[in-house]
Amino acid sequence: MLLDIEEVRKAPVSSRERIRLFFERIADNADAAGPMRRELLTEMVHVSHESGAESEQARQLHDAFGALVREGLGAGDLTTRHAPDTLTDMLMGAFYVLMFNWANLDDYPMREHALAMTSFLADSMSPDESECSA
Image (cartoon, rainbow, N blue to C red; front, side, top):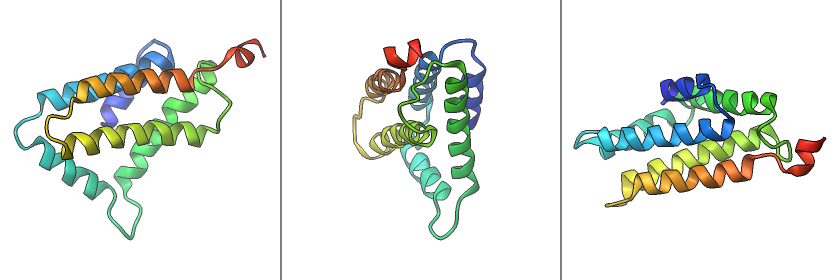
């Protein structure tokens, strides 16, 4: 996941497109995963958020999403209506919802939901006209 975020961050495209690329990769990874994919994913999420201590994996994932947000803010193609931490949390939340639903709901249409989330996130995180003219 961290490698996917890093590769997406390097793409010479807008933040909107980077968000789409990341969630599309998540769907690609889910499609390509083997038969134990759901169990493995559930265990990975559990290990990355062990109770009682901050997990290094969780911190790295948060930092990677935060870097994506900071770069988008620097480029002027993400909204300043909300704090950078809020934008980061929304990206992480969308990612975790996809993973949770895919791991726990039979026949969950991962790709369909990933692309719908991409559209929603990109729309809600894009600057509005007042931000563009400021």
